[in-house]
Length: 193
Ligand SMILES: Nc1nc2c(ncn2[C@@H]2O[C@H](COP(=O)(O)OP(=O)(O)O)[C@@H](O)[C@H]2O)c(=O)[nH]1
Ligand SMILES: [Mg+2]
Image (cartoon, rainbow, N blue to C red; front, side, top):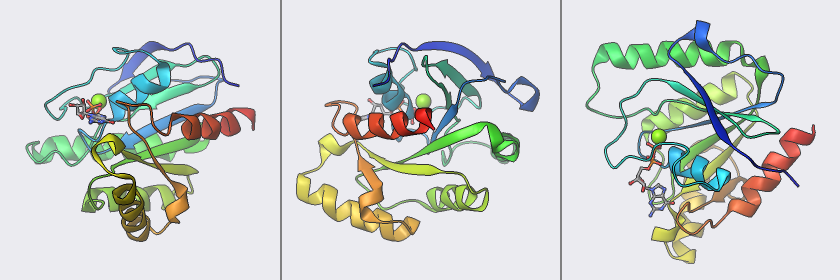
């Protein structure tokens, strides 16, 4: 089993600031407000490691956390309508740079909102992961807001849109910690490789 003992390391605003580490690096990505920070806090078993916001975030930083056996990179969210074209371009450049040297990335968690079909930006992100040959897991969030039947139904819709199997989608709730066991077993597999 993984021993999880997490702490914030640093933030990177550009390529030159990306963290170099000997530990496996795991990235978390998804649109603004999907629940990335909450997911990281659930993994860490801490309430305030990553900042959770009611307002969709505007920070354009990669935040790094040391989890002991691995480093987790919280990537800036996308799809927030109110950002300027210049900010969107800056985000795209940061992501291009991040995945360009993706040899150091062991795994990516792509978070999508379990209540809705994936957005156009989610599809762009997943294509990005496919074209960079990144190993990834799709995590659907906010399962506490859905019935079991709705979770199953939405997983099928999300899988069809993202061209993966419904069984490859892990529904989670950072409120109830539903799905955490499955996430930990993915992490365990990644870290052992
Ligand atoms: N009900 C519910 N709300 C959640 C869950 N995860 C996140 N949220 C809420 O969604 C909002 C955005 O969460 P945050 O983690 O900051 O998203 P981020 O922008 O992707 O980092 C906050 O109001 C959270 O409380 C969840 O599993 N269940
Ligand atoms: Mg966040």
